[in-house]
Image 1: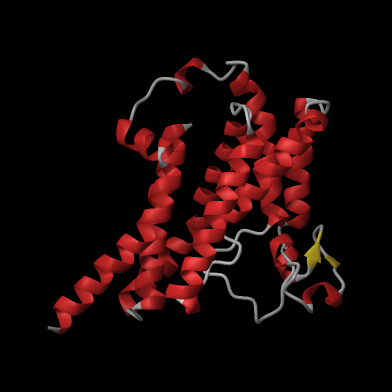
Image 2 (image 1 turned 30 degrees about the vertical axis):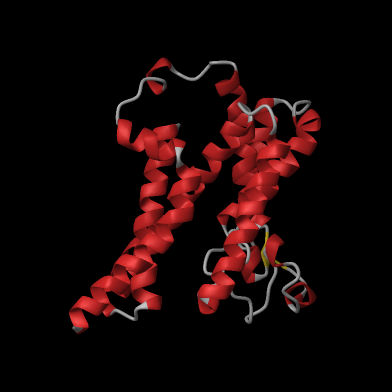
Length: 237
């Protein structure tokens, strides 16, 4: 799991690097790379969220983990608002994961009463039913009321208007159901019931990145911006 999470983190770093080149530095080749990489973004983000759900079954205090992560997420919002207000992060993946951890910590006794396969299949179905929430569509064609999209107060849930801005955005709908699926799969992990081939480490650097995902998330964007700024300065000198 650490290696898959590490690979997802590596993809995220590349994605944010291309994003910075495209939007912060207005480079055409950065935009080309971003557009090429963009279709893959939901898949590695989904893998990261799924593994976070699995890992929640191995934690002794999801409430404490969630509270600490929420504090970090709010600090990220503050720093981006002060330093790069055009690219402020209002409800990014750290905000999302912290809320999911807190909800899982509170609802775990109830979640454990749901049969594994029922919960897993239900999570997949609910994800598919809510995956187009941002476009005003529920369950493959049901139009949602326009009133839900007149304010940005519901942006954490996935309802917002055209004025909403967040450089990194992962609403609870539909992504919470990917996390939920992970919590059900995590029961196998907690029992040591994953296939034996999944346990040995094969790519240690990715495993290291997976174990230090939070630190890498916090530091990678300032590093990317610093490197890009230095390159831009050198090219213009």
